[in-house]
Length: 432
Image 1 (spheres, rainbow, N blue to C red):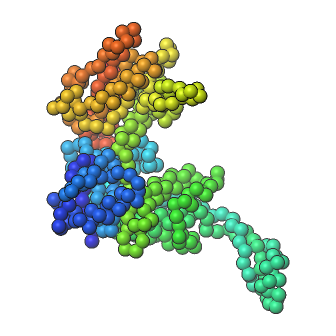
Image 2: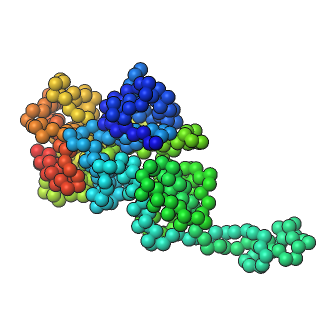
Image 3: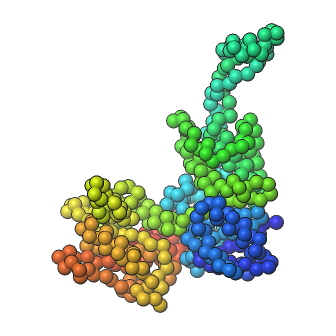
């Protein structure tokens, strides 16, 4: 039986004597296995205490044995169903996984976990790819055949068939579905069959596995992705499905996946999701969001600078703002918008804004000759008023006018239906 606990970022999971999904309690043996999974993957997923663990900024699923821990974003006041849908939508818009935004509304996030919804996307994308045809390629094959075809290999023929005139050791090209692309897909399908607990997903995955019955996926290892070469004639849908395969195998823990113990995680950094979600919205809807005669350049499209140079003249300490908005007419930096995945706290000094973030924004403003820098935080509260936030003005260098603004964007919306609300907020922020 599958044991599932659903929590938000930074929500504690307690360690006790017996498991309880409702009270969010795991056993010590389950905690030990999660700790092994974390060490195998080489990253901090949880903050470990004596009697509790606290998920950090990773969202998605951590799976060990029959225990599945679903970690959802710390925002939103609604139930887990809408959170899952919003998370899938943000991942799709951020282009972290090649989802189609239109597909998100089809998922039953009320009954199914984030993992099962993700698997459903994989199934739908694979079905779409197979409508274009299963990939066949010519493979160089050697065999001791009963008839002559292709090229006769004389050295092997003399060694193996010198006394057997009815056999021919030949080399020939064989047009088959046994190739690396299909091997990766079949290995991924077989992996998901062992992970999924939703019968409709399992049934569809088994169907795809049977379609690739000629393909040998035994012994597949993620390093085989390094050898992958996709022919130019392959349909774009295969590029998408292979990217999803990479994501699924990215967190493979080989020392935990043997025998009955299935170690697996599908985790995404919320800092990256939020940053790219905002970037893609501004970039894709720039005519609706940005002021006239302006363009934006994100940190994924270059636009970096270095704070200093070393003794060899090489740049060091790279500066890479999330979004730089330029005035096309004056050819200058109009404003910088940098995202931080952190909930502000009115009860704390300066709302909990860290000094290091302010220092970073100040460096951006100086090096990019930018008068306005906006720190953009998420919120799920509608009563947050921009006038309540501090505004930091530079006084160290009076000749350079620098102001650092603090803004929030309310993500407590029903996505994708209410994406226009977020776009309007971004438009107001870009105009301030």
